[in-house]
Image (cartoon, rainbow, N blue to C red; front, side, top):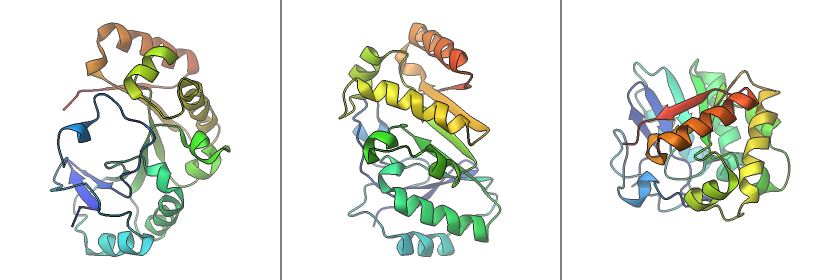
Length: 199
């Protein structure tokens, strides 16, 4: 049985889907089956909200400071489940809720999604990954092609209307020059950039 919940440092992560509309060249799931304290993050099937709530009830949240929707898939591909689970967490716990996302949910659902997603979480980390559409498409390999880059930037800007804690992230494997260009882009949009060490 795959892990639905797993701990990494003082956060507990929610692995609610393995579906993703991207195939990033550096994605951790390309070369391992786990992360943090998880043993296996490959789901046999997408868990129902009821199954995730049962996993929450059975989990030891001792010393947990934040829960994060992030696993071996894009959490917004299970948006209905994400919203239901988030609502449950808000009504039963005091944890901060973060979403790690590729920022392509508007393309996934063919509509604006920022408002409903921002109402369900306290912070959003959006994978910027590269500083321009061409290199982004080459590295992230989204099913939507180059239009995904602008859609991701628009989603980030829309989220700023509803939520104070919105940030971009890049992984340091993209190289110093691309990190610097990503920083310039993030600065121009007024959104903080987090540079993550690849592990």
